Figure 1 (cartoon, rainbow, N blue to C red):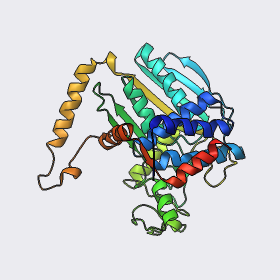
Figure 2 (tube, rainbow, N blue to C red):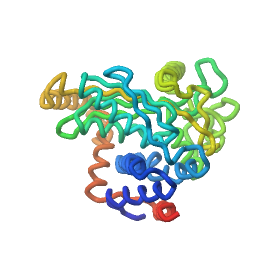
Figure 3 (cartoon, rainbow, N blue to C red):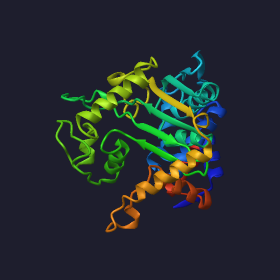
Figure 4 (cartoon, one colour):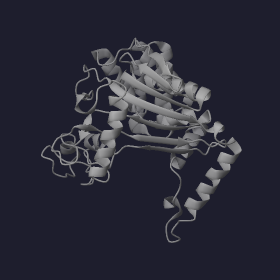
Length: 342
C-alpha cells in the first residue's frame, strides 16, 4: 500500500486528465470530485475510475475538450449542455449553477444533458453542504434493472442523493443506488473471483445468482422489487427525460463500448437553507435528529452497528484521510503515475 496526501492525489489525477487532453480547469474539477470520493471511502467511484475515464476520452466516448454551456430559462432553472464532457466535471459545474440560482431565489435546479458517468454523488453533495445548501440529486445510467414485470434491463440504476447541511460539519448525507447493491461491488467481486449474495443480481437468464461473473451478464435487482424499479424509472425520466438527455435503454454501457457517446442526464436541486432558518437553528435540529436516532438503539447491539444518520461513516473517513492521507494500492498508484506522463 502507498499513502498520498489530498493535495498530491489531486495533483496526480489532474496531470492524468490533462495528459488525456482535458481542459485543465475541467480536469481540476474532476480530480477534486474523484479524490473526495476516495477519501470518503467510496473507492469504487474514486481513483480507480481514472483509467476507464481516460480510456473513454482516448476512444471518443467522452470529449476531453468539452466546456459545458449553461443557460437560464427561468430564475430558478439552469440548463446545462455538457458537450459530452467527463461527468464529474460537468456535474460540479451544474451544481454550482444550481447554487447560484438558489442564492438568488431560494431554490435552484440544474438539468444536464450530453454528460457521461459522474461517479459518486457524495462529493457533489458535500460541496453544496459546505456552502450551506441542502440538496436532492440524481442521474440516470446505462440500463441494468428490469421494469416491474419486465424480462430485460431497461432502467438505469438511478441513485438518490440527499444532503442537509450542518454548520458544524456533521452533514446528513445520503448517496444510495436503487439496486440492492451497487454494480461496482459486483464488478469488484467478479475481478476478485468472490461470490455475491443471491439477492444482488441475476444471471443472463434472469435467475438469482451468487456468481459475480455471471451476474455481470445479467441484471441488478432493485430494492423493494417493483417499488424500487418504478422509483428508478421515474428518476430516470426526471434526469434524462426532462433534461433532453438519453433515457432508459437509450443510454449505452460505456464500460463495454468506450467509443459510445452516453448522453447521460443529471438533475441537481439545491435549497438555500439560510433562507429557511439560521444555520445555528438547523444545526440544533440535526443534533436532535442524531439524538432521536441514537435513542432507538438496541442495547444488545454492538456500538459499531448502532443506528446513525446517513453520511456519518463517509465524513469520518474523510476526516481520517485528511489527517493521515489516502491509503491506496501500489498497483493503482503506478497506474496513475503512468497516466500522468502519457
